[in-house]
Image (cartoon, rainbow, N blue to C red; front, side, top):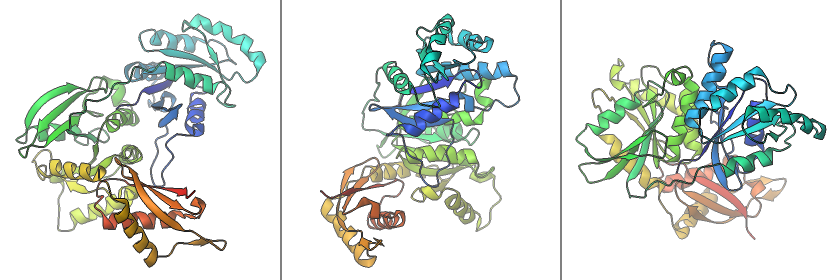
Length: 436
């Protein structure tokens, strides 16, 4: 199910990024940064009172050298097009400005809910000054202080109250997958090539991602797949051309609804920072992942080219060491027939359950070969483990003291589990808990 999208808009210097960081950094349930994952800080996943959502800071979108008015116009337009809820941020210190009125006139064009937040209201005396903001025409202004956290809980309550009704994807038994990546890596070409490769298209289905059409098809072996539309397949005007960063948002929408995500790289251009941004989000979302290197036919190759490129991927995407790599060409159909089978296998691994008895045999053997570490004379004791979830496979390890579980030993246990069971293509999560 796609998570609701909240966009923070407003003129420069009203504290949009401060509010973004306040919500992102202080929510207990926020997705934590994962070591080795490059983060693009114009977006984050967060949670408030059990409601998960994606948060976008339009102030972090670089519009190049465009004039000031053009920048705020394009950023506000992004919010109108993509967000489910818009937070319009103004400043209580400066009062209503011409630029605020400019943003307001743009937001009048939408039927999306708009919450008017007056930032920098740092003390009770300043609350009396917020009434001028009624003139902007968005109802009761909400006084907040992004710096001190005043009113952010009320803001989050209002945001969640305005989310649309939950729309769940139809559970039809098909494997849902998507192609993600920065613009011009060949996602659209891969979509068209797969659908033209002796596949029977069953239907086009309206997706929960806005303006997306999901395509269901059946392979010759009878396996059903649903291909989810993703970032870059359709662009609504030059605003998406002007900022490569913003393609991350549409990728996030597709990732949320996928069982397996194919991270597409361009063999001609190599690996870019943007590739790591979108791949990092798929990893953090716990989806099955396949790395697809497209346009492989364009390279001059020798017997070391593929191995060298694979080594480069492993170096740049260390946190995706579990993801299989396939080198394809949408143009020549090279190795394209392998993708559906690989997607099916990764989906099976992503859904795999391991019995507690077999899991504990593996854990005990691992500890026998590499005893648990000690800290200040106190030794970590691992009592038993059990699998508590799938998609991704999640294991709870009961110990005497979770603080004694060093990161390196947790990685060792994960590697032993991977060596014993086929979890290729899927992240696995280990959670340490004190045995009661």
